[in-house]
Length: 164
Image 1 (cartoon, helix red, strand yellow):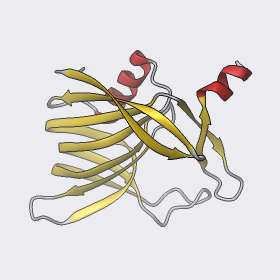
Image 2: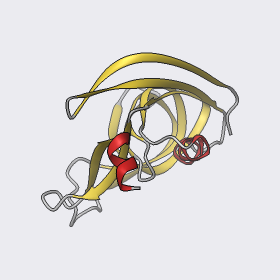
Image 3: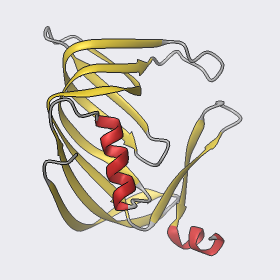
Image 4: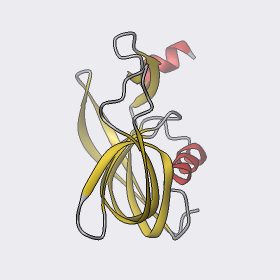
């Protein structure tokens, strides 16, 4: 899965419910034909990361399936399927078991499109991904009655250890 993995630990303040957290940084490089989302989820699972998120990503893909912004919990059919080489202009989101990722891609003429990643992000040449983990936090998802979607829940690890 990973061609190379570099890890570096640093201290950073992250605003989450008024709390700071230590940050660990992982760098992953994926090669042609690898599925970006499933590779990242496997990495998170192997490393047992509890509050992972995308710091940055550069690379390219040959396929993408995206849900567009006008989708709702009751009408999730606003989906596009892209094929052919596209540059990854941006990839952001959280990588807990129900990953929530948004991507912006550009085609060979520089036109961009973006949306919520549903899958099929197949690497074209490379994908260099920097993944951060908030070491003092834990991410989960719960359905929000207001939106109808599973939304991010952030807890301190000391809170989750009390309930475990």
